[in-house]
Length: 258
Image (cartoon, rainbow, N blue to C red; front, top):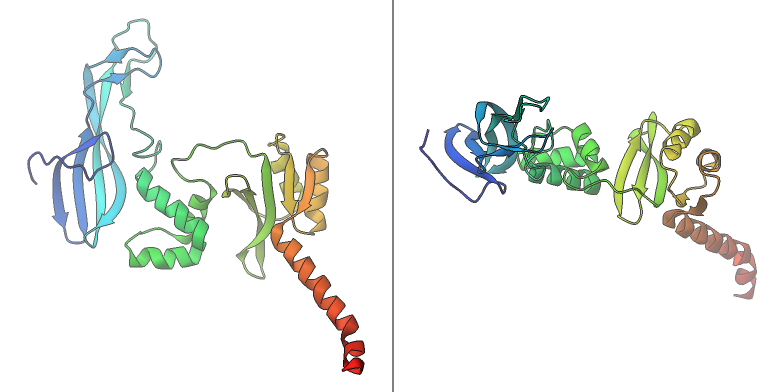
């Protein structure tokens, strides 16, 4: 174990205090730079330490090895006698890791990007090659919302079905079309499930969907004032079908002329 080893390679607000290489794993000991913290109850500053605990967070791999960040989180004692909170932990920035999260923010951002771009199994296969030890289900969950991106109330959404397991089990995918991001994955494509989700988001004004009658009924029941439109893919498919139908109808006549 090295002595103090400051580096700018770690997320902002954190400094390394040591590291160890053990086979395929690099363990980095780190701590928060600030020497004081604010009580989450009363908001007063405290520098009186009460103890500490180690939080293990996975960071992006480096040099062909998995990187494990061992973050020493300090506990402080609140100095305000009237405060109901006697001790509290220093706040870990969301950019470093989500509350109770086991991956750094930049690691989770990559998981979210690969999940949205590739889907579960392809992202898992690529993840193995670049040392991202993440399951296909985790990639799909990460695709719902990036770790460090705040959730905004969607106004224009797209709804379509997708296969958890092709030919056997299907769910419903909901996208925020203004942000161009997946915001939820529903466990099935039943109208009741979709309607329940829509009722929780009464601010939605426009819903793009396919010609699935179940989705149409769910939208009409949950959001009767919302505008329903066909999604882009089905518009192009319908235009293509109409063109091919017109060509077929005119084919026999064109052959006679030819």
